[in-house]
Length: 337
Image (tube, rainbow, N blue to C red; front, side):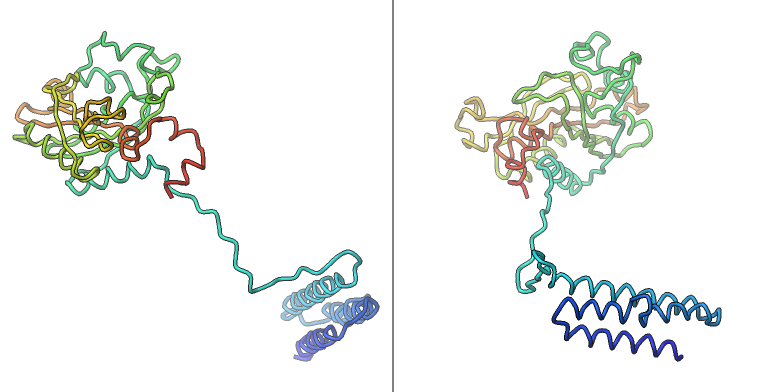
C-alpha cells in the first residue's frame, strides 16, 4: 500500500541522514524534519484518521513505533553534543562479569549422601509433621510418663496446648508409617528436630536427624549390624566399626554405633577424647511395645536407628563447632561449593 511504502521510505532516509550528523544544529534540524509538529512522521500520523477501519490500527501502531525509534536515536546522538556527558562506550571484546552462584549447605550435602546410600539398600524416604502430639512423640515409643525427656527443660511445648510439642526426634514417624503400612517395609526419615538445649559447641535447639526403620519377619540384630556397618563404610571408607550396649526406651536390645576416629585412625587423639572411637548413632531392635502401639503382630521383628546429621557432618568435614552450620558465615559456606 502507498502508506506502507511511505513509512519504509521515511525510516530508510532517516537512518541515512543521521550518519552524516556532525553538529547539534544538524541534529535539531533532523528532529524538526521527521518528528516536529509539521514533520514527516507527524503528518502521516494525522492522515491515519482518514484510513479505512481495517488497516487503521496496524498503520497507527507502525507509525508510533517509527516515531519512538527516531526519538531514541536522536536522544542517543544528542549525548555527543552535551557538555560533560559522553555516550556509553561498549567494548564487545571485554569478558563478561561472572554471576555469583550459590552452593548447597554442608548439612544438605551430608543429608543427600546419607539418603543416597540407604536408597541403594532398598529404603524409601518418608516425612512427618514437625509438630507432634505427646502420644506419637513419647507414649507410642514406650517413653514412660515421668521420663526426664518429657520435662519442659528438654522439650518445647506449644503454649496453651499441653499435649502438642515440637518433635524432639524423627522417631514419631516410625509409628505413623507402621499404622498405615503393612510389613515388609524399610524407610528412612530425614528431618528437623527441636530441643530446649543451651547453645554450645555441640548443642543447638534446632538440629536434623535421619531415622531408619526396617520391619519384616525374622529380622535380627545381625541384620542391623550388617546394614549400619555397610553404611559407615560407604560414607567414611575403610574405618573400624564398634557396637556397644546402650539403652533407649523404644528399642530392646539397644546399641550405640561407634566408628574409628578418622583423625588418628583409632590410636587416640583430642578429637576422639583419646579413645580411638567416635559415637555416631544409636540403634536397636524395635521394642515389642512400640509394635503393639502401631498395630503390628508379634510375628514381625525390626530394627531402628537414628543419627544426627550435624554430628555426621562434623565428623565428615573435621569440624569442632556445630554453630558453624548456623552462623551464615560466607567464608565458611563457600568452602563447600
